[in-house]
Image 1 (tube, chains in turn blue, green, cyan):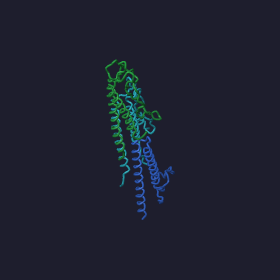
Image 2: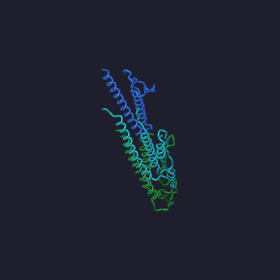
Image 3: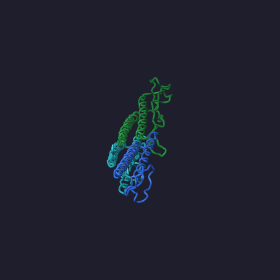
Image 4: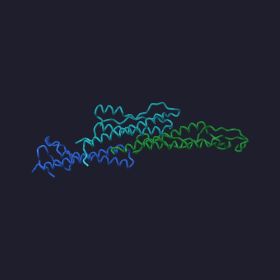
Length: 99
Length: 134
Length: 118
């Protein structure tokens, strides 16, 4: 889904991993926010998974590590959902403006 | 190592205390086990315990290494009327120090109770940790 | 990107980990309270944490310090005081539960900031 370039909004809502913002004017675009939110979800979930596996196999990870990492993973997902919702709202707003 | 180490450690301590209590009970039960002086005397059982260390030298509880017989000197007594006496009329008394056994019993019971308390308190802590983020 | 972790949350997680270690060391002291020659250990982390928070560098904090209590041994060289260990254990339990509450508070604030739409 390509957003038409409008001043103040830039970037493609992409599936790629987080990238460095390129030009200063492109900073704070929804695309970057979604990409970095996706990265932090993937990191957080991977962290929680590996701790869960560690405990299940008798390793020395602690219960609180497991629970805090799961909570943070959930928060990351919540954040991603919010960013996506805001992006959709912005798109719908823009589509309305084109009349 | 595991997620509930404090409980595992305390359980190992409770096991050692339990074993100690059994040895003490055994010793006290034999406080009158007199034998012929020709035989080996009854000897009190002692639990030799030590700390368990993991690969990094961190303490992981305690364990009973072995159960030894007391090597104290036995007391031979002249008691010719005793049916257990040998030909010369001597018997050997059990190598048990009753006052030491009583003192040990109090210590072993206390140790056992404390280890159980550790299990109980840490279970509460782990339960609280399991409610993080819930 | 909204950071999930800040200095306070990092401090809470560090404290929970240190308290977990303290619980294990205390359990070990109690388990070995009658072992000849055994010397009790203590976990301390509060000073490190206070300094790290003051300098705003909790992410570079050192591990908790585990050291002997220095108490004198008894007739068999054992220096465990069961009364002290039981008090330590109960305090650790309560502190850990307080840290759980603190973490949940932070997580709740983040949830509000993110603003869930259900």
